[in-house]
Each structure stands twice: as C-alpha cells, then as structure tokens.
Length: 180
Image (tube, rainbow, N blue to C red; front, side, top):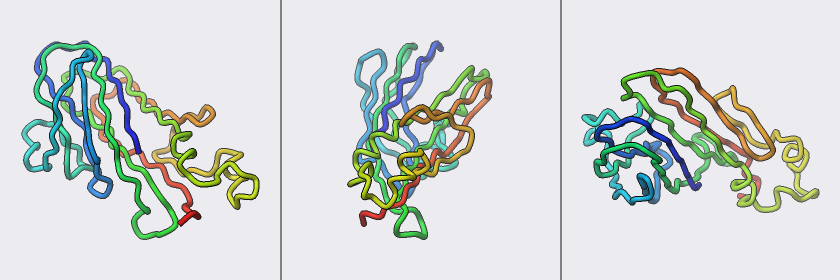
C-alpha cells in the first residue's frame, strides 16, 4: 500500500522526518523531502530510535531522515505490505500509524485522508455485478475502518483531530479477501 503524506510545518529548529512502522506490516521503502530537497531515510529499531522521541507505542521500527533545519512543506512517502489480518485468512488489512508526541504546543489540526479507490483498483472484480460483494461495495460498506469518527466522500475517507497535544493513532482498513 502506498503512503503519501504532506505536512506544513511553521516551526524553526532541527527536525527529522519519520515514518513509524507497524511490526506486522513493514515498509518496503521510505523517502522524504523538505521544501523539495530530498532527505535520506534509514530504518531503525525502536531501541535505536527511542532517544529521538519519534517512536510510536504501536511501532517496532521507525524510518528516520537525516536532520534538517527550518520549516515548510515536509513530504513523506513509503510503500507498506498488505497482509491477512491476524487470526484470519480471508480478511486483508492495511495499517498506518500517525504519531506526533514531541511537540511543545498543541497541534491545531491533523487530518489523515485515505483514498480507498487505490485499494479497490487492486482487488480483482470488485466493481462487477457478478461479484458476491457488489452490494457492499456499491453502498460503501465493503471496508471496515478504524478508528470510528471518519468522514467519507466517494472513495475518500478522512479522520480529523483538532487542538490536540499529541497523537499516537493506528489507522486500520480491512476488507474481505474472497480472491485468495
């Protein structure tokens, strides 16, 4: 599953881009840019990165960039593995971790948006009428989404948090994998 995130930062100082990784769903690669300039990324274990303050309680590994100074648009990308949900063989899932807990003042707004259309396009025959899950797909109930509180517009779902001091949230998308 492809992850693409843009964050506008208005702080000054020394920072690192980071992408936490769920232990069951590793990233195949990760990369980042600050204001269009590439930052090299490297994967670290939780123990190696614990001193940075950039490790989620949900992650075993974290991708960290080299340090950079300044503010502007931070752009991060990664590709994660999609696997069967734990304890079941016919449910596939994608997990993404949001983590900001090293901020010195409340975060005004965090919006996480996911286009389920990319997943839908990868599932064989999902939009066909002879598919056994066509009705669920048609009415937008094919995917199970966590946590609750999301908004849906077409194939796009968004979670929004405002005026928070930190966030360490696991986003989970599950669907029935009849194709396996």
